[in-house]
Length: 185
Image (cartoon, rainbow, N blue to C red; front, side, top):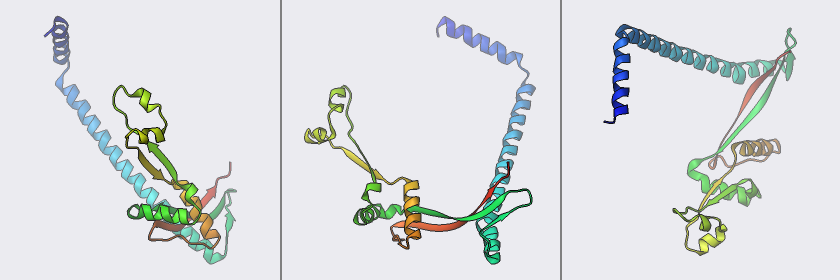
């Protein structure tokens, strides 16, 4: 052990001896109580969000539909509207088929392609080469394809509004009502 390490160890031990163990225990108990309280509050927030979602996507839309209303104004000046929200993701088990469907339907430009090549140490010069040159030199490029979630969501909404469908076996699709409250400033 170096001389500096010995001095630091002695200083640390002196500091530990100066602290009363009850202070440490007290702070540990305080920390545990705060962590428990945070967990309780997080669960309360989770339940409040669940209640708000139920009111927003089910109760208010049903009540407004029964009254034949599209929008209402509240006494405080806030406006309330119910809009459809569209959700669409690619079914992970059918990703290749889903991308083929997009291509076959003239929507292949929505698919992003990322091609990369891995190089070893001291191969910076080779890394600067173009991807096709890398493939010709025996490297194995990898390709990653994806469609941005918001692009897919917009596509689904657009197709539904035009009366077109999307295959539910390739895409996870659903529409739900969502209440928007425009707050008066």
